[in-house]
Amino acid sequence: MEPMAGALEAFSELTPLFDTYILSTAPWENPSAWSDKLRWVKKHLGNAARKRLILSHNKHLNSGDYLVDDRHNANGSDRFLGELIHFGSPAFPDWPSVTRYLINAV
Image (cartoon, rainbow, N blue to C red):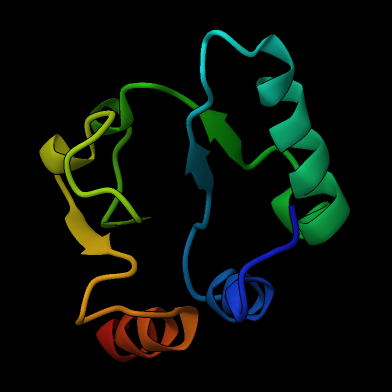
């Protein structure tokens, strides 16, 4: 899978400003999905994301100021204690809009 437009640039811009992690989930029925995600992160984000991948079906158990997620009520994202940024919503339709919002929040 290729990165979404603007995603790599957003990670690059936000990493120096935030303690940035990749929080994702993968289907239990597909055991290779977990290692596939790790390979994807290494390939596309390299050292900037080294040891910054968290795979969990319980996103609300992680703490942080912001969670960018394309699903607002799955895998605990709706119970995340920080601010949920709903990617793909009218307010945040793409990565440049998310990046602008977060940079202005600093």
